[in-house]
Image (cartoon, rainbow, N blue to C red; front, side, top):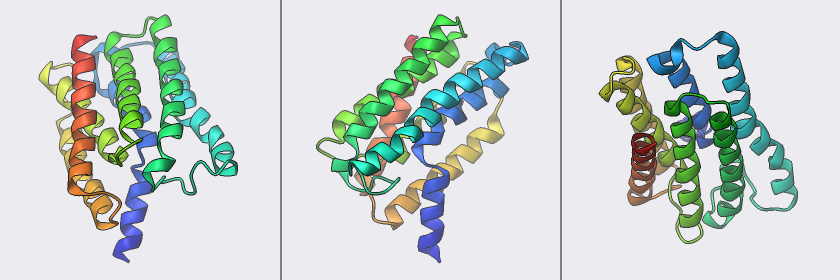
Length: 202
């Protein structure tokens, strides 16, 4: 029963959803974007959803057919780096498209950070199984910290929820023996530091 719960948590909070979750947080809680027209919001959702979820999922049958990986979770480190590099390309496409539309820098900076953190994870995954759940959740926590720190919004409740969910998800990954504690911590720090630095510099 507990194993099934841990597996369900791993799917619900799969890293593939994190860029869209981050965009949703910014569009609904950042005062720099909140007041944009509704049609701009819709365009942003379409661009981010298609390039970070739609296109990668369309590649899934190809990866399965070519036996790049056996499961959506990509449990083996050798199954990870090719899909991650492909996803990084789609993330860069999302960043490039948003930047061409002159979307506020806080959003394009976040997506650029997602691209960089995914690229780092792809390179690391050639040799070591860094936690991708950690990378994704670390990025979301960093985003919320920056929104609060610079008073672009006041998502205090979301921040505490994100911390709780992060603890539950990463504990589930440890319980399933998919990662060591070091791999989980390294993943979280990779996402947190990369998103923080990219958004601060951007």
